[in-house]
Image 1 (tube, each protein chain N blue to C red):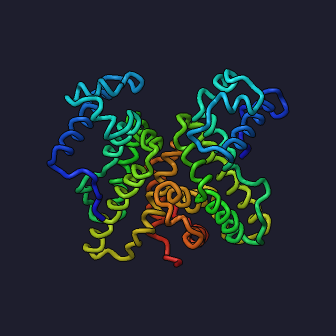
Image 2 (tube, rainbow over the protein chains, first blue to last red):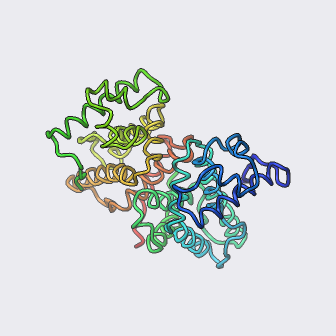
Image 3 (cartoon, chains in turn cyan, yellow):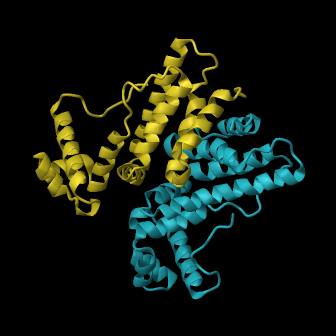
Length: 189
Length: 189
């Protein structure tokens, strides 16, 4: 499930995007959100403010765009030798990232974005990662590898739900339970 | 799990809230979102704009507040005679509401709210409903009633995840599958 990107890699458009994203990340590291402005980001990135307005519309959408990138998983997730282990290793890292202050801010930025497409990109990232781990399990010859839907509904959905609505229970112990259930259940379709 | 409300029912504060919420609902029925303004809502509700700014901060937060109320479930959900039936009846109604245009708008309003408390109220609504249905199943003497966490992770989480990120799969058929899985699984804790 390849992630479709609107921006052709290597083109001028991609270079502008990278410079602007980089500027946001650097400024976010030293400034609070309320201090950030489009002209500042533009100056730091070496582009005009109108380039930013034309492409992203406003600061909130630009920041959401940068935050989505933050959620892009590693191309090559840790191989622990079992699907359960791989899911746990990926999930613990993701929960740690997303319960951190910058992670929570990124999550809020994305949810506040008026563009559904951004939320959907996050969803595709997780699904694409589930697909990778699933393929790996199949090629190892593991028994009873759940369907992709089952992994999304059983592992990604409760992680996301708890991160959004009930952060206290977005824990490694609960993750272990979600994974065990997703792998244990007989499919009842 | 009672919902803690900031506003004492029957007091002046509650009456103002009800009048302002009512004004938003009435204006939303005849105007598009972009046309809505705080002075308009204030006039329609018979309060001053500063009352609204003081209490809600801005239009986005007011609208999110009204939208959260939209998600409050019925106090007395349909009794079909089984937990699976009750979950399906409630869930189908919820999915129908939340995939409608006003429902999607309400969901977006709530997600865009800067106040985590609003998102958490939605979460409490669903959890409180799960608790009600679960109690009912226990008092009927149904066998193998899952834990509250199991119902939230197994039914509410995938419903919410699909509604937010992948609306196409927020269907009654998938709901049936989530419920069957949540009721079938042996707890692996």
